[in-house]
Length: 133
Image (cartoon, rainbow, N blue to C red):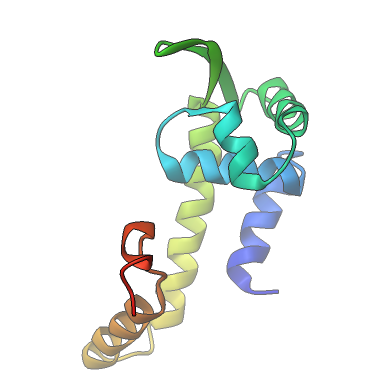
């Protein structure tokens, strides 16, 4: 297991967040805005009741909160709370520290080349995927 995954796993474990809930919390955090429960079910390819159970667990821990969708009164939005953001920020700081440690031995030119190669490996945004030959 990579040091980055080990760090994130440790933070989640220390906060009693199971892997399935951690995945959902990470997705919400990375999206940066509340999401409909139905969108989350589609994203994770699970039944809506599964998302409900995951959100229930995260909500009990104070990491997410539900709110009515102002655009559709039948829908519910799920967003990350301040406590959830703090937990995810702890993971981000650890990732940054580990990344800094990994590249400390590289020269400036090597870092530039490393960044170029990492960008090349990054998946294309969904809007570009359909236009690739």
